Image (cartoon, rainbow, N blue to C red; front, side):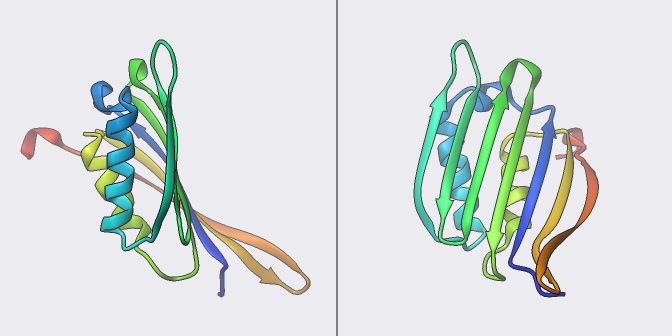
Length: 136
């Protein structure tokens, strides 16, 4: 099944609120995740909301990584979109979740741009991750 891209949607819970509330730390984290995943970094932009929360995007050659955070709820909504077969999006996701100290995550992978005759469609799979932080 040929696909144009892979879109990962991640619901990350139990995250470190100090990291979630810092645009500089979130930028560094997503840029490093792109490097870990062999993605070509082009630019980034991050914004801190008042009184808390960060939204940001790292533009990569293959598409983007983005985040929206709610430190007061220890929650982050992550997006990793990768066009083509280059790069390792799941490695980026594992890196981000680890750096956020996430305790639980729900991940959805959507294969986008699957050609179906003259139209395009998508297919998806979803799973949960639970991290036992006391054993690390």
